[in-house]
Image (cartoon, rainbow, N blue to C red; front, top):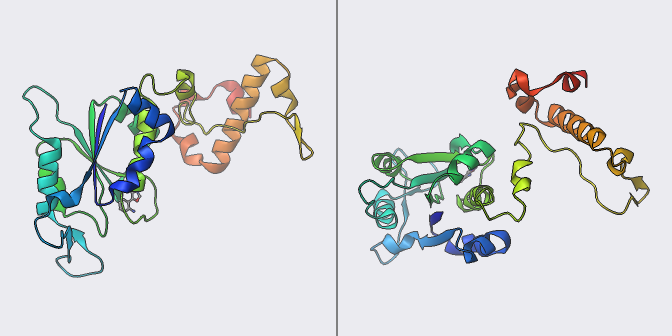
Amino acid sequence: MRIDVVTIFPGYLAPLREALLGRAIDAGLISVAVHDLRTWTHDVHQAVDDAPYGGGPGMVMRPQVWGEALDAVVGDVPSGEAPPRLIVPTPAGRPFTQAMAHEYAAESRLVFACGRYEGIDQRVIDDAATWMPVDEVSIGDYVLVGGEVAVLAIVEAVARLLPGVLGNPASAEQDSFSDGLLEGPAYTRPETWRGRAVPDVLRSGNHGAIARWRRDRALERTAARRPDLLAALPPTALDRADRAL
Ligand SMILES: Nc1ccccc1-c1cnco1
């Protein structure tokens, strides 16, 4: 997978080259190119934003700069080849989910546009949508200063799903949300720590009982913390034992 990120703070994306993602890049599973948006400014101040029409606080990122940047970064898409998907993190976006991470993992190329200030002039999105799929995506209902943190989160969630990136592919299959539920509590050695013992069932060796206990804890946790996920489960997702909980 090829990933391009356009930002006014390229250094913010340095963590992409660390640890698991860094190894995936070194292995050639992913290529990541970070582009400084100011490359496509032509004034001495390298201005990337301007006052909003209609007044109001903050600044809006200029369409000319973004238009030239995306033209250059996306480049000419060879005929017959699918254009990349443009992902624009924004608090006004569609909530990012594990299902979307799987969708994005199937793409051969993703381009991320990191907006700051009060966002990017809407015409940039509208223009881009005439020649590539554009997703405006939110990573949560809170306000960040820019899209860079969201890009780090989305890229990590997507990249770990790519074949060969995770050491143990089973990890991705047993993710939280993979069965629509939150994962339950996890434990490791020592057996007792500060007077707290690991639940006996997890040391019993009874794999059926362990699976049941883990499912029950996942259902309890999901009901307590994310009842919306429970309500969204298809009726067939809960078996009789689940309902007895
Ligand atoms: N708050 C923001 C400001 C700028 C770019 C993205 C965001 C964002 C994305 N998901 C939540 O917030």
